[in-house]
Amino acid sequence: MKDWRYDTAADLEEPIIERLRRFPREPDMLVYGLRSLAALGLRGWLRVYHRLEIIGRENLPSDGSFVMVANHSSHLDALCLLAALPLRELHRAFPAAASDYFFTSIPRVALSAVVVNALPFRRTTHIRQSLALCRQLLANPGNILIIFPEGTRSVTGQVNEFKSGIGILVAGTTIPVVPCYLSGAFAAWPKGNILPRPKRLRLILGAPRRFESVSPNHAGARRVADELRRAVMELKPSLTADQPRRI
Image (cartoon, rainbow, N blue to C red):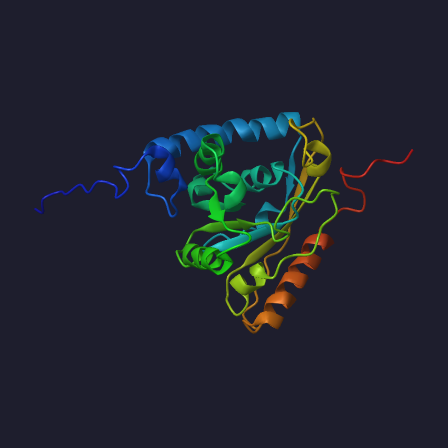
C-alpha cells in the first residue's frame, strides 16, 4: 500500500487578496462553498426580483469546453449567464472581466474571484497574453468561458461592434460558441446607476457555432466576430424589455 501524500497549495503563503488575483487559482474548498451559497442567493434574487426567464438551455453543450458570448449593457449580464448553467458547473465557468476595473480594489477582487469566478482580462495592454490564458482554459475539457465581445458595457443599450479578439480565440478551432441575448438588463441596471431596478430579464441561448473552417488570421477573426454579433442579434425579440411598450 502506497503512503498517502498531501501537498499544500502553491499559494498558501500568499495573502488572500493576492491568491484571489492570481489566475489560474488554486482549488479552495472555502471559496467553493461561499461561491455556491452566493449562487443560490443570486439565482433566487434574479428569479424573484427580476423575474428572470431563461430560454434554450438545451443548446448548452453537454461535454467538452465551450464559450458563451452575449451582448453587454449591465453588471447583471454575467450573473444571468452563470444562472443558465447547472450548479455543478459553477466552479468551471469563468466570465472574462476587465482587470483594470474588477481587480483593483479589495471588495471588487473578492466579489469577482469568489462570487463570479472571473478571469482577469486586460483590455488595453497585453491582450494576446489574456487570449493565451483563455486558450489554456479551453484546452482543459469541461471549462466554460463567458465573454462579452463588445469589450465594455453599452451606454445606450444598443449592441456595439464585437471586437475581433473572440475571432482570434476560436477561428480555426472546434470550440463550440453559444450565442446569447439578454434583454431587460439595460433597463434594470444601466451603466452609472448605483442599484438595480426590478425590471424583467430574459436570456435566450442559441445553437452553438463552430469556426474550424475559418482561417486563423486577421480577416478570419473579423469574420467570426461579425458572424457572432449577427447570431446574437438574431436572438433578440422583436420587442425587448429594454424598449418601452407603446400603448
